[in-house]
Each structure stands twice: as structure tokens, then as C-alpha cells.
Length: 220
Image (cartoon, rainbow, N blue to C red; front, top):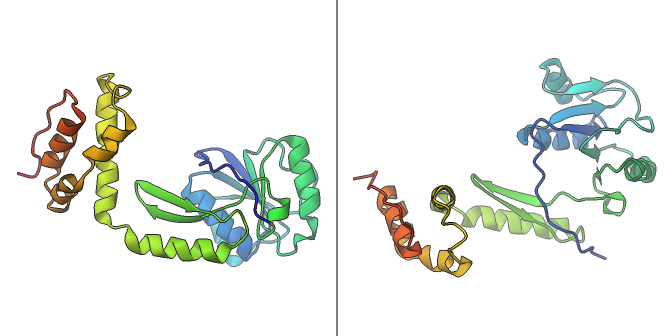
């Protein structure tokens, strides 16, 4: 049975995060957390070779012991990535007592949050989840979306982010309804981006939004 999760993105930059476990599952969690620029601590009696290298390089902290109740105090989130999941219930109880969100690898019944399949096409990040019911389907959708999204999609996302910043600077952002954004991002804007005529694409987008900003053709 799937659960009605609330999708959210955490900003973990420079925030303390705990990973419990020192094997393959822990490495997967650590790599994702480092990509999010979190401050990662791993608690485990021993580390895999890859995790040991990260610790030796100073990229993660290592507490060489079994997890003890209260070790997650002060953490932003906790990842339980033990090869043996028998302790997950106790870890969840500890997390809830301390008010720390917990993810237990491959054990959604003891998770406060789950990790979706992710497609990254900076600045786009898409998350796909089946509520923990069918991770294989989520991975399949991720692969299909990865094939679908291209450089032009990323260019459009970057352009819209820039225009939104310009509109906020001019205090004009709130005056433009969401429907106007959708109609403004039509095929012609995409064609100009594909032709690397970014300045013209920005000018056209602004004109269709009725924004009081002038943009020069940077590509001409």
C-alpha cells in the first residue's frame, strides 16, 4: 500500500547529516548527500574502501562504533543504511523522539521520508516516486525522462530563472499570472534558444510577458 507523501526538496548545504552504516548502501546515500553539499557524518564500526577514502580525504567524518541511542541528536536528517535492517524500528523510534526525519534504505515502513528516483538536467531536477510501492517503475520513468530532456530544456529553465530574477528586481513578478508564463514559452522562444540566439529569445519572452525590460541580442 502506497502512502500520500508530501514531495519536498531539502536544502542541505552545510547542514549536519548522519548516515548509519559503512557498506554499499551507505556509500550510495553519502554520494547523494555530498552532491547536495551536506556535512556528512558516518557512524559504523568499519567503512568500505570507498567510504574510507572519503574519510581520509576529509570529505566525511567517521565515528567508528555501532550506533547508540541519541547519536542522531542535532542532525538535520538521518539515513539508516545498514546491511541488516533489523534495527530500523529502534532507529525510527529514536528519530521521532528527537524530531529528526529518518530514511531507512529499502524499508519504507520505517521511513519518515523516502528518496525518489531523480533526473538531473541542471538547473532542472525532477523527482519521481510511486509512494514506495514500485521503485522499479520510478526508475523506468526516470530513464524515459532522461532520454526526453535535452540541452534546450535546460536552456529554457535557465532563461526563465533569469527573467524571473529581472522581474523581481523591478517588482513586476507578481503581476504576471501563471497562464501568461505558459503561453509565453511557446515554440518560437524554443527555436531561438536552439539557434543559440539567447538574447532574442529573452527579448521575445519578455515582450510576451508585457515586462518593462529591454534585452539585447547577445548572440548576434
